[in-house]
Image 1 (spheres, protein in one colour):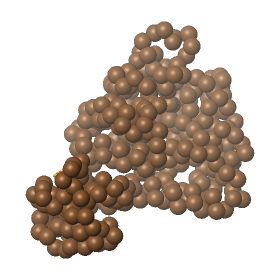
Image 2: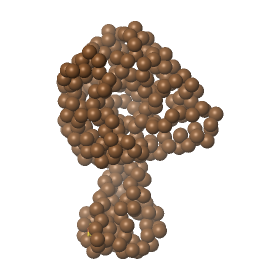
Image 3: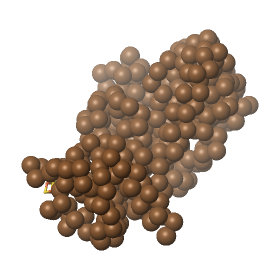
Image 4: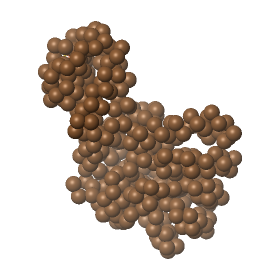
Length: 356
Ligand code: SF4
């Protein structure tokens, strides 16, 4: 697939645009605590490390107050993921977040107050090698244009801001034009991709719970990605961040951009099942994201159809009650108890990766 040609933008150790892999982003969903709460801070770093292991590249934090400066500075320093600050209304907070070590900030220049204040932010970002995402949402368009076509308004507004940034010789710009309506989102990104060469951060805003968010994102973002458009992405889900990361990886794999990692096949389960394959999948699916090797793992609910349905998988698990059968390359290699099935599956994956 031919990816759209764009400028390169550097976000700490991640380079986006110009054919680099599509970076996966998520957003921390809780308020920050004072740095003196060490247990909370260690737990936060543990969480960020687990997101990195699952394949996430970038994490965004809200930065709504100077009270968070010390905590945010420590996170920028210690995080295994590139850190982005989400700023609204106040250029002083943007400048603080940049000075704290933010790799990128996300602003909507329209709510910062004035062009001069935006210029102060851009100048500080330039001095500190910080990228800026101009992030426009359908809900935050200029009031005077709310009755116009949202696609035209979002694209024209984004390009007006990039003109400002260019006049200040700033080129580390990323753009996003998210909308709750998938068609507006799709058309806005398509149009923007035609009219500029900046990397695009893809997302459908406020996309809802897992089912609606993944469906909407696959429809809008999957189409854009399959047309070569998109350099970073966040699947916005009203649920655990791990779903955002796994959904982004799955969409990238589905459209054929990312091939590495475990391809999970699991049956829906039916009246024939005596092995609880659904619970087993829930237990292991996030752990499987940590593997970079190209393997197919099948988790099937019964011993009648399971082996046949999983014959093409590298590794398969099926079961009868508490007895679980492990297959490698279509051959039965072990029968284990369901209590140890997870451990045996991970061991089998490790052995197959070592043998590759
Ligand atoms: S593998 Fe077995 S349990 Fe799963 S859907 Fe097929 S028949 Fe039903």
